[in-house]
Length: 169
Image (cartoon, rainbow, N blue to C red; front, side, top):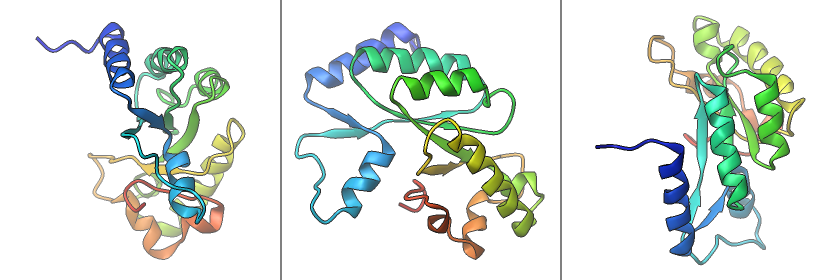
């Protein structure tokens, strides 16, 4: 039987820590690979990322466990109400975790790339009111015919101070 409880998640993280794994955020990873004087940890490491799609409160419970264990992770929030819970975003940021934008602007703009870009900028600014967002991650939007990554065929997220997007970096 598969066990997806918080207790099992804590056990998993504890086992990985005991095996010597280091945990880094995606933002930390991007900083490491872009700096000529930095290097990737020599010990095994995990880039721990969570996409907050529907149940933001569950993400806070996970973030609290990680914090207790001294682990920092990346949390990517969508603009939909189920994900975009200001009190949860604020609490996770206050625990020292990275906050990022889990964007789906092409779907929300019905494929209009210019409208999607304006919406993206507005939402990025919104999430930056909680954390200095430097990484983003596309949300799949499986019911949409629009690929969110197509936004970057015309625009450059780096021009907005974004240093990484997992599908590209």
